[in-house]
Image (spheres, one colour):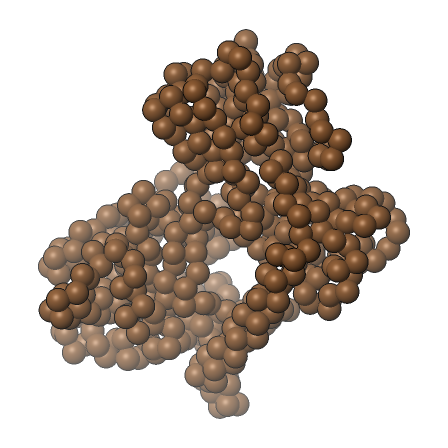
Length: 437
């Protein structure tokens, strides 16, 4: 089960102190030693543990994880969730904070993240999504390999234990003479996952077992993979990509697709072009958008940061410039490369002073007098796409809407334009579609 992990040179093991993740730590250490004993290069193992600060003993548990890791010869980092905690939705907020902290650490250290999700976790995830009316993607539950967004990169997320039961993992720990921490939240019926866990004995009596659900999710994954290949083929054949960050979709070919493939094509296009960095998950929103496309009312719609306009022969999709969008700092240096808005890879050579990257629409809001110095928008580029392209701006260290002056737009790297006074030797931006990293 761990053999596929060999392709990553650095692995970060997510260890909470519970039975599943402690077993993962021991299994990974044993596996890495076996790989090395065979004369092969084993991945370097690190341990990550998150102190959410939600319980009085959370710091002690995190310290205990690091002590156990040290006994196995592994480095350990404690990641702390700082700041104010929400009054409601704490389970989801804590999960989001946990993955964000670990993904950022992994991005900095070029590591893949490994979690100890089990057969029962897969079972519970399937039931939770079934209860919410999820479609095919949701009912696939958790994949053995996926990725997490982390600032300007994506981090591999690996779940090698999805076919292993909690009982077997705890038996492994008992065989090693190890104890584990039981999180009180695992008995708190306020949490949805706990409520499903309590129903497991009744579901087993009805023949609905974790292994049966795991078999179903594997078959659903297979069906999804087939659909995704078909959608990828459609995108390659019928979508024209423009460097200013918009695409033209051949309308007749799109309308000939089955409904599920039209939804999937929209999910890919709206998600990537809207800056999310991947497929859009808002199925209800996508269904409303598809229903609108079948009517004659209105020429454009916006969903999740993406703008869709329809023309006679094509659908035009790009970033919505009405939202502020992200900003990023470009520090001085011989060579600087960043990924901006999950849409562009921006490279600057021999930058002499700091610049900020922001949407052109936002840059012009700060300094509308700059517009007269910019090149004229080409007729084939929609106004919304033109205004959503990246601009390199000097003097825009903003706080809210307060901007020091003077501000000037040094470059529009997506179209290869820069001011004669630009403080660099070269700037360019590559539109990342359909790839994301």
